[in-house]
Length: 501
Image (cartoon, rainbow, N blue to C red; front, side, top):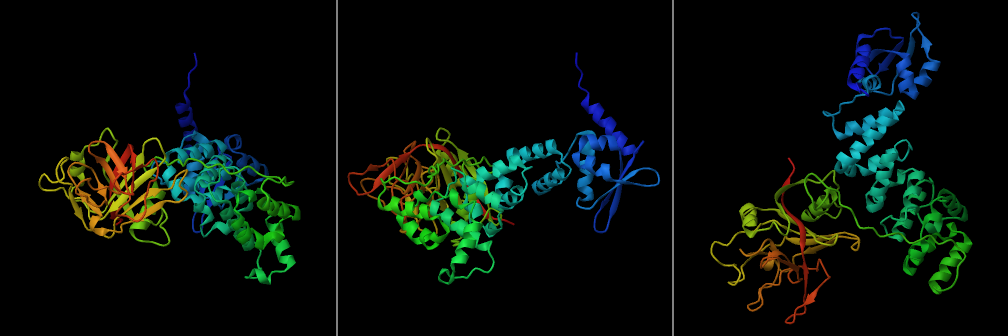
């Protein structure tokens, strides 16, 4: 028989810490205007922490033969948690937010508490993924400097690889550590065009060399050589042969002096005669991945980055919102699947509500379709719009739009603004939310986007909005030049967008 009485053991050690019995170590935690003294035991400290093992071997003693340690890089609050963990193996951070927990991970590493660091890393990754994504640039900068944060490093690299613009387009990109940049651009799954990667590393390299002339025409041979040396670990990782001839001419050629002569000759030869053999090492083309949208507390279809992008379209922002400065909250009104949809539920929960965002996860693909309707849908007062009767009612609006969010085949999201505002939104009892269309006496409304018309049918057919948001699979109408693209819904959600207080 084996008994595990760890809780009682933990409590006994915590009692030892609290009573100060037989202590032989004094730890002074010094803040700017405050000092707090802790009494501890060298045997426990040395066994539990490599930091204390080192410090105690060199610590001075007072007149009572107690070893003295001064801590100036840790707050009193954090050390109180640390010392209780060292003695009792317990930790409670329920009342602390994500920022505090992340900072506490950094503090834990100071004391080489590897098990605690790993547990807290996994906690943030599994439970607070949405917060990590909102702070990805800041977190990536910090963890890339220290190989002790392996779980967060791995998470950051995989997350940035899927959406690299978060880092590459940030103001802090040029401050990225070289090892972090090399790690990113060396990934086969970095979801970024090769020419954009090239331009980014050139931008980073130039920022590392103070005093370079602003114009390339003023650069000397020495200037190019300095840049070449600065980028010596980055240049071999670029997939030059995945760039177009136009990319090479406009973006690589001006900097050809920083490439080895044999490589430049091979690049030129390959584009002039693609079948010719070359001697340079050719890295494999980058792998296009299917984006994985994180499961969020507020949505099963979109994440915070998607919400920020939609908010940017609502406010017609040239510089899109980030997760941190998104001024809107997305309040869920209705959620369901194809099997769970009823027009009755839609009209009951959404009738007359304004500023609505519809998002749809297409079954069998990674597509996310949707639309924004600031005026809302109004249920017709009579039988107009019932299947078999008149087609329904249109409402004017010049602020509506529909969209398709980026995915494995769509590198940039599609935003389609309304062009015929008199057909912006459609109200009919027989269907769910409907955008656009041009009413035809014989054949119906050919909506730009509609959910659950005539029972279960959903489709897109570009007519009253600027761009089609879905191309395939499509079926051409015999009576018009447009194409209907049918799809099934895996999950849909309707949000009301409101300004944050």
